[in-house]
Length: 47
Image (cartoon, one colour):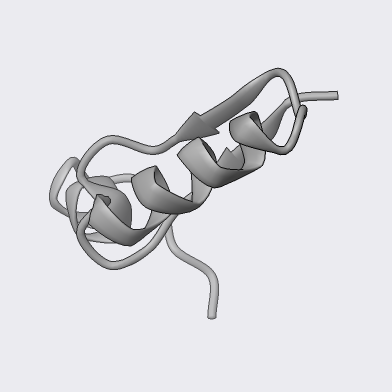
């Protein structure tokens, strides 16, 4: 299964993805730009 991490701007999720990969997880991705980039691109956000 693919694991996609996100945060506000993408920095913290990138660090978390690195740590998960070091722990042996595969298929780990950090969403570039975080949730801010997602909403700026016009994609929907459900709260």
